[in-house]
Length: 104
Image (tube, rainbow, N blue to C red; front, side, top):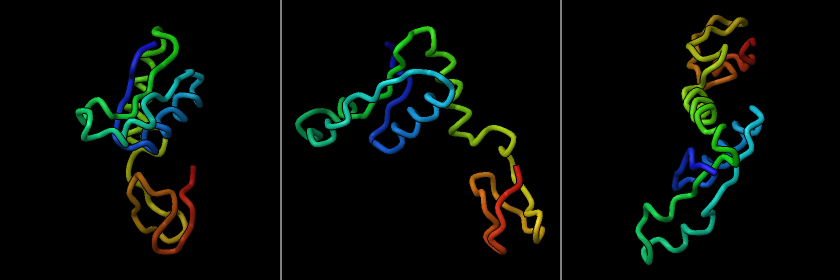
């Protein structure tokens, strides 16, 4: 097992695990409950961690997480709404002006 990600944000770690699972990389979340020990333990020791089960998957997992954090894929850059022409930022999937969903 090898650690590929850590954060104080439990939801972010579970999201990262989901990204890996979609890619067929088995991973485990550890230290989910250590946040309550912060103060008794150093904060860095209380981070929630994501570990891949196979060391050979670690490099690919880190690449998937980097791309996921950047919003990579076909929809990685700014876009223009096909219904009203309003420009949209990469992190949004729906037009703020007319409500139309971003085309694939």
